[in-house]
Length: 118
Image (cartoon, rainbow, N blue to C red; front, side, top):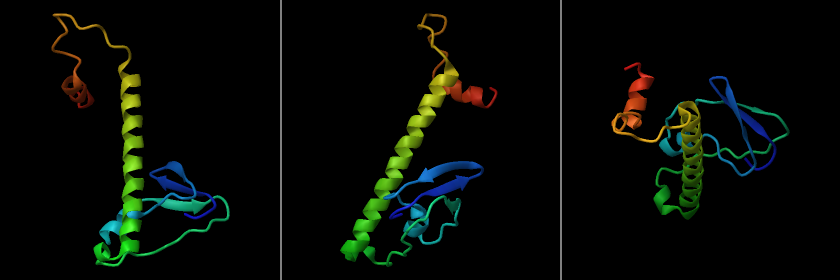
């Protein structure tokens, strides 16, 4: 997006898309991924729409666009990972100091089992 403001919605959860951000990069990179988001403009918006050429490795502009999209995806993954870790810690509450009785419980495997009721 060049300027303006967009709101992207996935299953009722919305998030803002700001100038300089890329949306729909997975579809551009793979060429055939269906749209997952519903996007609406909350202000007048100028956005660019394009398709990368099939042989983009030989095209410096295509390679630069691909690199920018991969950077945007990496940033989103890191942000999502950070949010998941924070939510996990908040849901876990304070952890007791390990003792001989609890040394083998409370680890990641036990928390994952707990998610599935085991």
